[in-house]
Image (tube, rainbow, N blue to C red; front, side, top):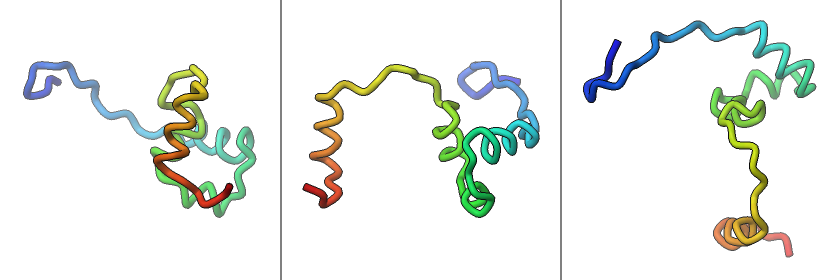
Length: 73
């Protein structure tokens, strides 16, 4: 299948529930009530699904802290 711009699109695959449950409940040790409230993007972020293994630079952390203060001094 191809998108309107000609890019190849892979067909959707069913969610691998056995792997999702194992990662959430056993590896991350999330309580079931928290696990079931997570959105798929939240779960993907928690399990490294967005890739990227670089650590955040201190300067970037400072920028984010100024942009999104949490009220803690």
